[in-house]
Image (tube, rainbow, N blue to C red; front, side, top):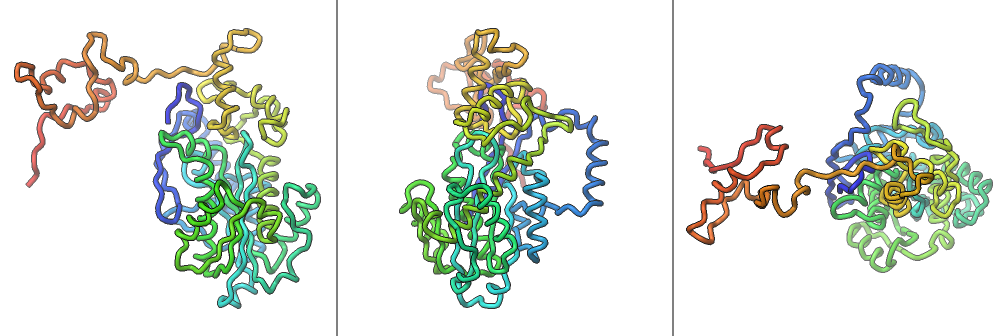
Amino acid sequence: QFSNHINQSSISIASSNPRGHRISVVFRSTRNMIDENESSENCDIEEAADQTDDRFDTSVLLPSKTNSVTPLPDRQTTNAALDALLHASARPSPCNVFGLGPLVLSDIPISIKNNKDRGVILGIDEAGRGPVLGPMTYAAAFWKPDAAKSIPAGFHDSKQLTPEKRAALFKEIKSSDCIGFVLRVLHASEISRNMLRRVPYNLNAMSHDAAIQMIWAVLDAGVKIDTCYVDTVGVAESYKKNLERVFEGHDIEFIVEKKADAKYAPCSAASVVAKEARDLLIANWKWTETSNYQPRDGSNYGSGYPSDPKAAKWLDNNCNVDPPFGFPDFVRFSWGPAKAAMQEDNDSTNSSRRNPKNSGLVIKWEADEEEDGDESGRKQSSLHSFMVAKKEENPKKRGHLAELKSNKRLGIFNELGLSKVTAFVESV
């Protein structure tokens, strides 16, 4: 969706298939094209460096129709993938501008591989639904019911754990030979372009689809799921019925409840993975706007929640610093505080509050300049009128095509060399 300000790094049109995967077509903004010629040499050098180091190639973590995410081969590779994604903040292209964000499916524990007849118990939880800054993370954790004695003690809703305790549990999960897990990252840019569509794809729908994607990833890896515990988003009963419909025939018992992460160990483990992953992404964020880009106040944005004074101050200081684009892609443009900051900065008459050089660019589209007609008073032609001749209500009126010939045409048609359709010819 287009708004009065260009305030997003990309615009996408997407559809969904039965598995909840999203297929996006993107119209890239000029932000990602700026200085491409000047920076191409630097990019080549950086790419060459990436090819020679041992860093995990995070592009394999992007799910698509042609590239389904498969389990990583072993725990060492799993941890290398997490390190690249969370510590090196290696965001695989092209998820910065369109498509789904990364999905990590760990190696499948030997105890699960060797006993495929019995299913696992699996829990799902998220972190970062509310922030105006940074990604939202979804996670799943799973293990065999008879492996309970080998599962680390102390799991609880990760939001209630101290950072030190949560980090220690995350470390235990990563080193456990009984626990498998999935991590899905929804970056701010993905959230923004989904919610800013003409028909918004809201956060609840994204959350449901993320959960569905993770469950499919586990099932496609050959893992049978007996019970799936989900910390609900929205109405629990409706969410449960939707999951039962999507996974009909897989004999999965779904338990969807509020505060499930405080009741069921698999949900608690998923909560730890999601919260720790988001915190690491925020702490190690790498800016992608330009090679030398640094926002005002640097990374002093706190938790990213609108109620955090540090986040509010950072958002205010970085509003419209780069006028055509509003904010870096670390910001969720679709969030109320971001929209309000853009509008307030643009509308403010207080010179101490508003810097004219930093105010947003107001865009007027050619098709909207004269909604009711052009300067001569005639109505502007609709796209439909280029294809179908309108029936005359009054025989005395001149033909519709003749009227079109005298109307002012949109400049885009001339630029593309497009002519009006005057007749349809059936090919032999």
